[in-house]
Image (tube, rainbow, N blue to C red; front, side, top):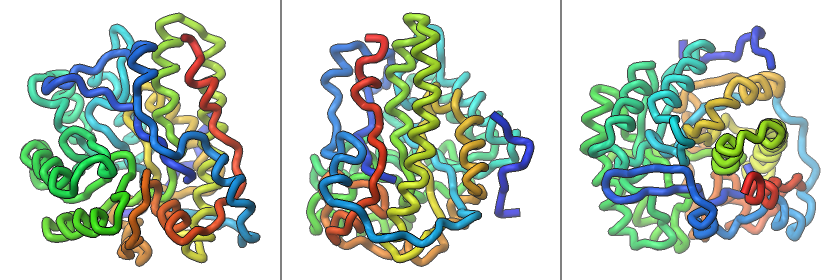
Length: 349
């Protein structure tokens, strides 16, 4: 059956920030980010949720949200998203997250791979095998996660192609011809946007456009710091704020769709295979269950005609599919509560 619903036994879109990404050398050694390294991480122009929303003003009145919206879960930056705390490993994270998904009969979830971390990294290799053996899928996220705004279309296309041999080797018969833009940047100029789109089409890719994103990976670095400091109170705050932020931006993303497209559409949610999102996945799925979401496969969701449309615009900094339409058409954003960015950056420092 294509559609997987969240069972009753469960208990307990906005602007996209540049992912916190650390790739050190060809071996892809990933470690807990130091305060110095953290300070140098590059962020996009969408720095704080809600600030541009308030500048744009309030969107026109929305129709009631659907009682039973569809959503496909997707995970970026496999097999090595975010830093690791001492003693942790990618295999544990992959095993825990896939067990959680399978326990809820959720299979066929796409994880988007940056293969730079695979050569020579046995932990990352085994983590990716665990993901696939659990009945999940993989797609292309480029070799090393470059920002399209910062490189030429030709260099970016080479990055996509460089990822392909390892995708094919690991995926086997699975369909790995799905692409997710790093940082959700689809080109800061129309020329670059259309060049990469044309390359993807010529190479039989479908674009896994997210409509919902609450920057779940922003909680990983402070969580790792707080684990090292054994600060239970801070970790409790991280859990609470993560769920609050998720609930807020699941709603906001759906309201953005109404402004951008005139209706809600079947959704694609962007998540990351970090230790903290893995820890929070049961509670996140419960929030989604309470909001009426029904889990579906990516291929099912993106049958909607909105995903066949090209925004046909250069949008600096990128964003979700509704974001790109709102930005390029100068449409208003709904009001929203900003992400607690300052506290996330300062916690457990």
